[in-house]
Length: 434
Ligand code: NAD
Image (tube, rainbow, N blue to C red; front, side):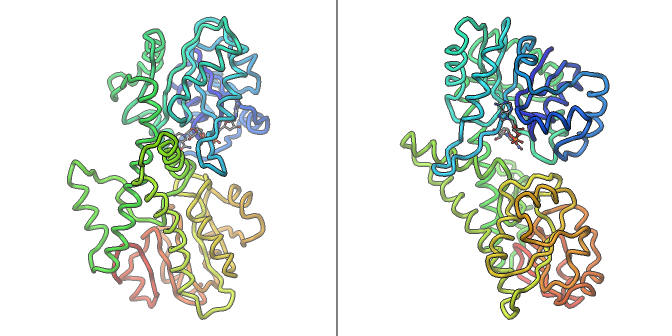
C-alpha cells in the first residue's frame, strides 16, 4: 500500500520505517527541514534500539523516503497517518491541537482519490470530527474517511512494539475505512487483537490507558514510600501483587516519578477533559499531584545528604526520562536536577544517549562528562536517575575511590545495597528500609 506519515518524530519515524519493512511504500513527511535533510542524508534523528538497520535497509531499497512537501506526498497515498505532536497548552494543560489542525488543512488541499486519514497522535475525544470538518471545509469534493488509530508503542522499544503490538485499536465509522486498515494491518491479523470500535471510543481508549498506567506507577511509588517506613521490601510486595492476574506484574517498579512526552501531558489532558465535561476524575488529578510532589521529595532526599556542604557537587547518572531512549521531555531526572541547581548544587552529568537533548535544555548549567566514572569523580553524592543497563555494571569499589564522600541516592535501585553498605557507603534506595 502507499502510506504517508505526517510528523517524523518518536512515533512517526519508527512507524514509517516499520510499515516500509512490511512491504508498503512509505513517505515520511515533516515540516522540519533539518530533520528531513538529515534523514535524506541517511542519518537517524532519534535513538531507538534496532531502528538503524531497518532504516538503512528501507532507505537503500527506496521503500521509505522523506519529504517536506505535502503536494508530493499526499495525492498518491491510500492511507495517511497523522503523527504530529499534541503538546500541552501551557496554561490549561489541555492538548494543543495546532499541529493537528495545520496538518489536516494542508493535506486537504492535495487529497486525490479515496483516502483514509488516520489520526495516530494522542488527541482529545471528538478530534476525528474536527479533522473531518477541516478537510471537508478546505476541500469539499475530497473523498475520504477520518479514523482514529492511536499509538501504544513505548519509547526505547518502538521497533519491538511496532512488530509485536499487544493490540491494535481502530476507531472507524465506515466499512470502507475499516477495509483499508484491515489490509494495512494484515501481517498482524494472527498476532494480536485488532479491535474495531467507534471513533470516540478509540480516542478515549488511548487517554484512559495512559492515565491508568500513570496511576499504577504513582501507586507503586506510594507503596515504596510505605515500605521504607515499615520494613517491607517493595520488590517482594510488587512480586506478590503482580502474581494476581487482575493486577499484573508490569509497571510495579518504583522510581523517581513518571515522565516522558506521554504520561504527564496525557494525564493532564484527561483531567482537563473531565473538568470540561463536568466529570469528576479525581483519581487522575491526585496522581498528577502525587507525581509532581515525588520529584521534589526525591531532590530533597539528595539535598538532605549534603546539608552540611556548601555548594555540594552531585554526580548524576542519567538525564533521559528512562533508559533506552534519548528523549528528555518531562524527564524526572531533569526536574530533579533543576531543583538541585536552585539549591546551589554543582552537577556533573552523564547519560549514554541523551547528552545532545540535555544540552539543548540545561545549556551550561551543568558539567557534561564523557563517562559515568568521570561524572562520579570528586562528588559528594551520586544520584542515579535513569535506569540505563550500563549503570548496573559499575564497580562500587571504584566508585568509592573516586568520590569525595561515599554517598549514593539510587532512585533506580541498580546497586546492591548490602554490598554498598559493606564498602562503607551511605545509600538511599527506594522501597526498602536500610
Ligand atoms: P515528536 O515531537 O517527536 O514528533 C512530531 C513531529 O511532527 C515533529 O517532527 C514535527 O516537526 C512534526 N510536525 C509538526 N507539525 C507538523 C505538520 N503540520 N506537518 C508535518 N509535520 C509536522 O512527537 P512524538 O513523540 O512522535 O508524538 C507524536 C504524537 O504521538 C503525540 O500526539 C504523542 O502524544 C503520541 N504518542 C507518542 C508516543 C511516544 O512514545 N513518543 C507514544 C504514543 C503516542
